[in-house]
Length: 312
Image (cartoon, rainbow, N blue to C red):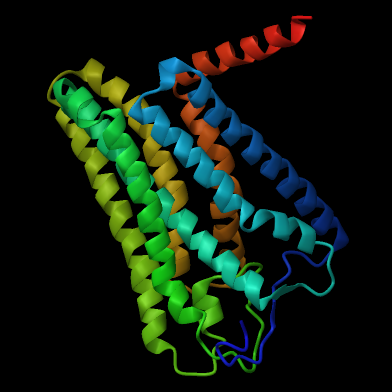
């Protein structure tokens, strides 16, 4: 690949998360436990939705897909973060760096569209309940999921095709513990001002615009419900507060990392850890602890698993 784009750089140097052995051990335990939580929590949601016929509705199908994306997004960075903690020389090959960037943005783009789809689902269910079954049927839901994946791939490719052909002939220190478009572009041996603007517009402004659009949408839903009754408002607020919490956790780091793409190293580490470690493990907790149907279905699935083991 380095011969195709004329690059002399075959590997990139990543930034360490900690220098002291004590902090390295703490982060190793922290990341390992959280990553196990991400895998178990999100897979449990997916299996519950798949095997419980009561959850075969658009809201839960979208939730299962969100869980799949959370597993994929965290898996692009967290395993390497864990393995690099005790490595003295943290390097990533040119090929692996490009692959990591591509899949980070595929997963991020898909998640963004899924959150929009989930907002549309809640709007239809709460504001237009009589039209819900015709508007948000299984076919529409599957089309939204397919569209999310297509848009996610296009979002990643629209940046990837430019970055992969950049000439890298000198500096190779990414300045972060993972590869991402804004930092890798800075290492190219050419003027990348226009490309940096494309990345900022593609990832930063779209994230910011989508976030404020979704927040306004949820406020509109609550305002619409308030006109009917305070009882309905309290129910809607409980449901939507989970969605809004996920929005804040997902979009806040994105806006800081791409609208303001070069914060201090400490902020860069913090926001990246929130996006790749904290949010994917909190999503299952947020959606299950605040959703009675999901909790009942999980208990039912757990009992089925236990009972099947007891059968000789």
